[in-house]
Image (tube, rainbow, N blue to C red):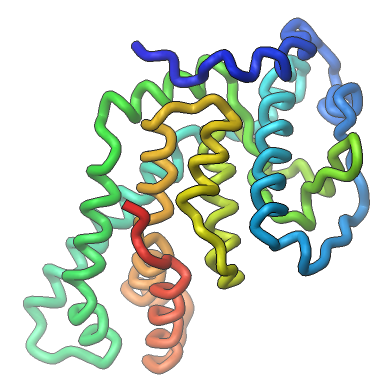
Length: 267
């Protein structure tokens, strides 16, 4: 099996003692200049393209250090490895079943008409995303992540984690979990799209993979996950179950907004 994580980061990881057994996770992080703070201040410059690249470096450095923690608190970390990937598959299966039901209805309300009208485009995006990474590629990433005990901070917002001079500031560690390091990039790209930032995502993904010594299959996984119409399918499911108890007009607004947030496919 190919080695997904190359040796380009040996210099950075060589100072991390894998036998380190700090009982307290925060104490362990302090030993590597990662400190918890009450608040992090940000401004518009933090969302410039170069700043976003550096923020992904910060997320990567945190993950690399946190993943080598061996203290007692590891038992409290949730295992979200592969969870997001499986969630996309579940959303798509539910969506397809729902569409088949709509096609059998004699009368449709405005939201159902909108969903059927957008079915072809949404289905194409979903199929392309789910088939872009081969089974063997995905399994190799899964095994690498589990072998390395990879940990993601979860909350990737700059208001939660940010580099300052020679150290990293963190507000909350509550969302830390075992997960692919690729998910840091996926979550950050979702933030970029939500804020409608004018940023070329392809080069940022390539730069993230290069920084972490990841091969092409990781780049493909990130592009596949950010190309999947996740927000749209999520809101279709909300409407199907009437979870939000909104009117037709409000659901239509949510669905249209979700399409914008999902953005164009990177595949």
